[in-house]
Length: 289
Ligand code: AMP
Ligand code: FE
Ligand code: FE
Ligand code: ZN
Image 1 (spheres, rainbow, N blue to C red):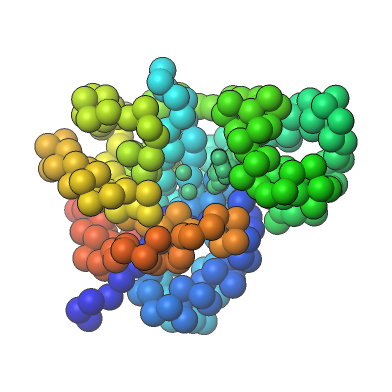
Image 2 (cartoon, rainbow, N blue to C red):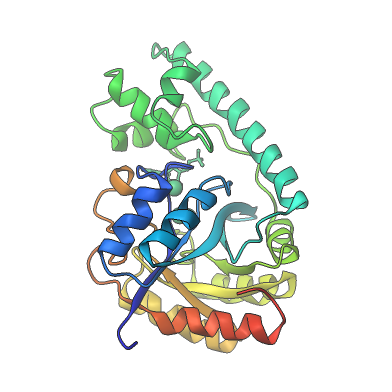
């Protein structure tokens, strides 16, 4: 069918989105999207619920995950698309990542308490889906305690990169993250490559050449944060490095203002054809679609 649109980057309550996986899928179907990928941070926990609802709603659900990795200049995000149902290696890594999240969250709560803003882990948990808990949930707890007027201020003053209570998270290296996802049989994409203000054209060019060797196969050219020039750059570099294109809104529900499912900040329109090309490539490699 011509004109069908998709969204291959969304978050649910299993990480830092505000919609349950089922509600997210229903919303996508109501919006007329043909397919979505659920790509929660560091967890596959929302996928079963999303798949069951997708079957009922008549929409395609791509099993995904978003992983942060650390390279020499900062944090980059990977999307694993077409994640398998059962994967022991993946469960092991997810367990490690979740344990690290818990200790890092507690460390930030300790700093905040010392600054006169006491909160318990249960205060934070209350604002989450109780799976991948992190800074967005701490920000919500700070707001409900009255320590900050809004989430933005929680990040700017306290828990964002330059905040006084920020503690970094242990992250995989790009090679580890890409190989992990690739070894699961996922198609690995570099998420929102132009989101970081520190990203330059030459650095992106170099990263793609390097990451391709680890198994990177796609680049998220279409993203709510990309302007038309950045989209063109991604498309050009994808062509140069023989990478496929992906696209998604990075919808987080009420946890990310101004980003709508499917349409992002309003201009996003990701054609179904992108998904067909990903599948075509996977079929040619004998991978599940
Ligand atoms: P964490 O994984 O616990 O380090 O938290 C990272 C998440 O926090 C990201 O996925 C975003 O959803 C959110 N986030 C990061 N920086 C900001 C910010 N400055 N304002 C609002 N949300 C942010
Ligand atoms: Fe997020
Ligand atoms: Fe991301
Ligand atoms: Zn995301």
